Structure formats: C-alpha cells, structure tokens
Image (cartoon, rainbow, N blue to C red):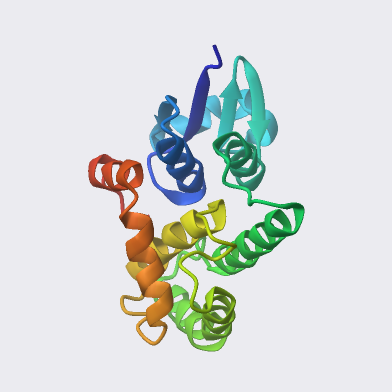
Length: 199
C-alpha cells in the first residue's frame, strides 16, 4: 500500500493543487502542515531546505509542479492523449509563471500593492484572454474531461481573488469553469472542510 505525506506550511500556497488532486481522486494522504515558528529548526532536514515535499513510502519528492504532475498521472488528470497532456502542462505552466511573478516577499505594503496592481493591470488580462480563448465553448480547458489544468485554474482563481476581488468579471466563461470545478463532489467537500487560511 502506498503511503503519502504532503508536507507544507499551514496555507494553500504551492501545495494546494496537490491537495486538490488527492481530494479529486479520493486518495488518502497525510496533510502535514508546518507552522512558521517551527520552520527554522527543521528546514535543514528537507531537500534544499524548501517545501512542499511529498513523501511516498519514505521517498522525498520536491518541487510543487513535479509533485502535482506525479499525482495527476496517478489520478488520470493529465489528459487523454500526448497532445492533451502537453496542452494541460502548458496551461499549468502559464498560470504558474504569473503566480510566481506576484511579489509575495515584498515587505513594504504600499510597494507590494503597487506591484500587484501593475501585474493585474498589465499582465493578467492577457493571460485571462488566452485562457478564455483556449476554453472556447467547452466545459473544460483540455478536451472533454477535467484535467489538472482546470484544478489549477481554480486554485489560482481563489488566490487572485483574495488579492483583487472581481479580477475575472470580464471573463464569464472562466468564472463558469470555477463553478464547474466546485461542482465536483470530492473537491466541493475538500474546499468546504479545508483549514481556512488567507493564501
């Protein structure tokens, strides 16, 4: 029997996509959440001193998207063909590129707000236009079934909405996709019952 332990901070952050995939597939896992006050004393026990880490029967896997992609393959969420898999990967990478460009580590609130405003005004609309064109009149971003790209869009939507509510109001098809993801029973249960954190 495979035992999974996902180790990350007590936040959604870079581990939430993997948590979504676990929930979607109904795979049992240990959701180990590290408090910030404890991190300095245990940081050096993890590869490269970074989280998230997925422990699989004692083996440690690093890098958030590598972890999520591994789990997506287990859950049948990569796509129905090699081309669909590549499309889903590209969509995830595009969303991730924007997410990591957000100045999370900026300590000055005023400067941080200015940088976020600039990103959301100059870069995010292009990404949203691209996603909505790609989605077209389909229910899911790739092919006829849900993939990890759809789940990651929901994760990102939640995060971006916390920063700038209503950011996607001009993209109704993408907002409708959020509702479809939330309509998946296992995910709805996870979203309802997960720990409440800001990000």
